[in-house]
Image 1 (cartoon, rainbow, N blue to C red):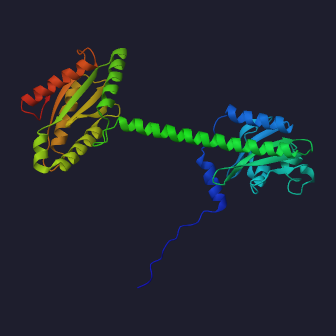
Image 2 (image 1 turned 90 degrees about the vertical axis):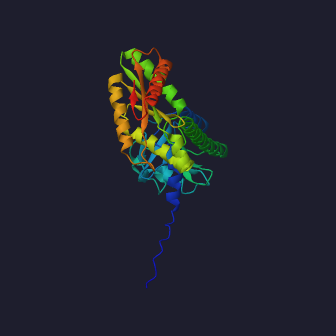
Image 3 (image 1 turned 60 degrees about the vertical axis):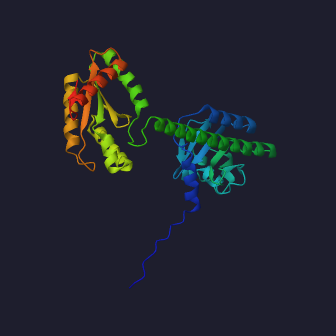
Amino acid sequence: MGERAVKLPVAMGAEGRRQEALDGYGILDTPDEKAFDDITRLAAFVCGTPTALISFVDRDRQWFKGRYGCELRETPRVLSFCARAIETPEQVLVVPDATRDARFKDNPLVTLAPKIRFYAGAPMVSPDGAALGTICVIDQAARELSAAQVEALETLARQVVGLLELRRSHAALETANAKLAAQSLTDPLTCIPNRRAFITRLAEEEARARRNGDPLALLLIDVDHFKAYNDAFGHPAGDDALFAVGQMLNALARPFDFTARYGGEEFAMILPQTNRQAARGVAERLCETLAGAGIARRPLTLSIGVGGIPPSCDAAEMIRAADRALYEAKARGRNRVAA
């Protein structure tokens, strides 16, 4: 018997890790932001140059997030001075005269427009050591920077990274808040909207229906004899059955309908642009579908009450009307629809 081959994880190279770090900030191709442009303006002022850029070195380009004295948004990476600068992230790359520098003298950015002669780029390094790009200053005349100007450029590079970290923290906080908000409106057992979400949505749909003169219907749905089901099979099986019923109701709803768990073994379904007669037909189909679905340990049935506007006067009255109809359906023997 031969030995089983073991697949080892492929190690990511330094460039791959650097690119992953850059992508993780979600900064590429974002709109102009004054905070970044202000930093380039300050860099140009401190260094006495006509142009300053915040340049992120992407896979095959350098892309400018902050710009002063330049209208370009990106240039090919192969021509990039900044791509050279991030090769030594621990120091500022200063090119006093590109026309006399063997690395750059034949570069089209030097020989043609914009005819760069002076370049200085301070690498922007993430907290985990990835060189993301540079804040750089450019001139069409040869020159030098003082030690104080070099130090200032390094300080501004750190400020850019600080902005990136702040943006990422803010985005993470917004995502967490959105997740919490979604959880507060979702029933944890059935994974469909809960009663709070239902009340909010019904008020919105009621206001829209009255504004547009459209009909609106509401179904209150009860799983028949559910206590007996729990007594027979146990609460875990009952939870499984409620989950299955909720998912089935949600799957049968139209894209613009709204299904929610109302409480206990009760569900609700909001039917926009639907009159009571049509809503009754929907409810009867739900009853028929569940009765033949085979989703639980024994057949389940539904009692459904229908309410709607007209004639109900508001969302609260719609609920009361549907609840009265549901009570009637139960009183008449269950497994039926009442309106």
